[in-house]
Image 1 (cartoon, each protein chain N blue to C red):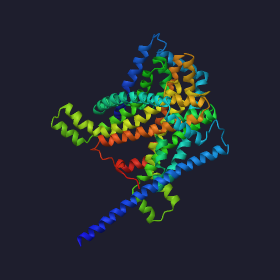
Image 2 (cartoon, rainbow over the protein chains, first blue to last red):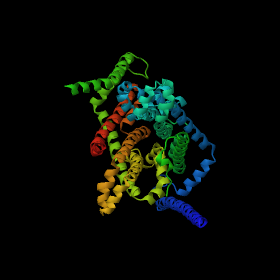
Image 3 (spheres, helix red, strand yellow):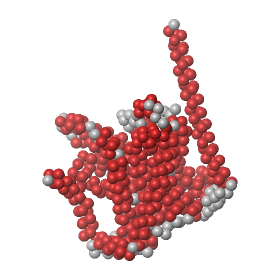
Image 4 (cartoon, rainbow over the protein chains, first blue to last red):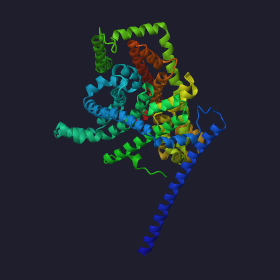
Length: 280
Length: 256
């Protein structure tokens, strides 16, 4: 009797699993169909000559360039240069932003005194500082990293302040009542509580870092993806420019996915609902 | 009386540091001969001259216009698209990879392509800003709709409220806090794209002003333009916060 019911239950689970697998591959088919549809519309617009070929290249030529770029040294060097700029700015901004954010989060008078500066800084389009920074530092790597740092610093700082203020008042009173030392309180209470918010800040910062790095390369012609893209466009090679654009998007997607994975590995105590969700 | 005093105290608590920094900058830079760091007084003078000549007004107007029209385009497309996608679980799942691609695309990369293709006038810049503004609004609209309490949806079904009515009376108001958060991100994206597109290739706008004064080595004007862009970004975000506060008053009231 019991073995029958077990077998029935087993079959039920197996059926559910196989239907889930089937659902997932069906989803993949649909996703691919959408992609093909986009390419088809693109090709139609191209083939009917609605837009000049200087503006809209054919999907096939973009695909060819996309493949060719993957085998070219120029592309990989440019990619690494963009990544190096973005990563340098991001790392410095994370260190400075987290340290300053925790201090400001712990000292309300300091937070009030800097509130206006923070509001000004977060809404300041830092890329506008680029011409000034070029005058001061020249078109060097240090200049690029500094501009990226100045842009990324704000989201990291603000997220850290939010995070350190989100700490449960009961926990704060308990640690104070037990006279827990500052160092221990900092490392074992404050940092873990603020970490999910800091992680979000770093993730926002990473996308921003790539955006600003590409922007700098585009505007002051320092080496990197942005420079290559702009150069291809001004040489009337929109096929190469489009291929670079697609790579730029994939870069953003890859970095974002990597950071999300890291986040769920490091922040195991933080049950973030949207990470665990399985798509239908 | 007490409220006036506490207001004054709060103001002083927040104002002392910014004021002190400006004062320090003013006096420390006074008489500075380093061409890269002109005295703040000189930057102020160039602001007064440029404003009185009427040129600066035109640049400010051009930049603000591009931001606002681009943002409006992005918000309309984003909210409409986000509502369509947010209401359908299937559509959401199918389109997800493409939406993620456009969300993480470094939006400044579209500027050379759009400006290279359609020229250096205002319209291509508005296109670029509009395109970049779509994605934060769209994804936040989708998330906002998805986060609406299932009980509310059941209620809508039970009372047989028509689709149109439920979209305007239930779905969009329910997603509004999240939509507003999306528009706020789009606003800062719009300002960045405005600056980059105007430095890249333009004939007007504050970014253009910064760019040409750098070329002419008029550093006081470059600094002035840069500070003005920062102030512009700040003012736009303050205005947006006021609008947001008003639009979400019902939400904050029900939360408290």
